[in-house]
Length: 289
Image 1 (cartoon, rainbow, N blue to C red):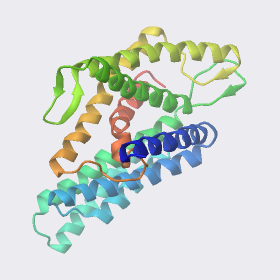
Image 2 (image 1 turned 90 degrees about the vertical axis):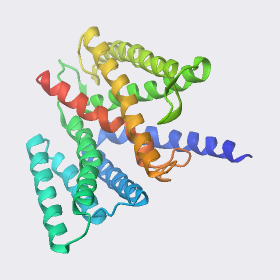
Image 3 (image 1 turned 60 degrees about the vertical axis):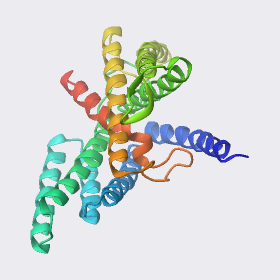
Image 4 (image 1 turned 135 degrees about the vertical axis):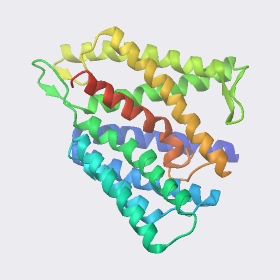
């Protein structure tokens, strides 16, 4: 088997195992889901600081990873103010330690460390916050709460990624931003957004069907709201993907790690999720959920 074929097989196997397991954890155990996010976020922070060291910076890596974990643990309380307190304390500790060490290039290395906490820790902490949101429902016997928000977001992002890939492969001609990601095309980008819109409508219909079966999984929003959510996720998901590609290219790396066989590291696989999770969370809070 060729190396490419082996990589594709590993990708399919890891997805076949990881996706059902992750969905099951999200649906049935808030504690395990929070723990999973914390562990994966710690891995993502480790990848980020390794990437910045490859670029020539000297971040306070161990402290940055610990602060990233602390931010996610704070999110498990379910209050964004507690997360904000954790961020302030983290930045204070990092600045104090840098002064105590008297390290050179303090501005650059402190900035890189803090950015890692924000980019990986703070963004990903919103997955925990999403899972803790209530799901308004009627008299349904089974209510999965905020798990539906997380699963809905994941489905839309998978459709965005898959739609962009297939549309780009079939019709892609004009490059989107070749300096950052040579393989991405405008046609692929449009195809990904189109798939998220279609997916949002299908999720709405599936939610209606499940409520008939006395199961509350997806929010009872109108079709217009679902379309707006699909549009926002489709666009920002691609922005998140491009941002991570931009950082990797600047660091001279192809992948940030090898956590997932055939997929690369945590940041490679969940780059679009990190930007869309805060967007989705604050949209829901704006809607008084």
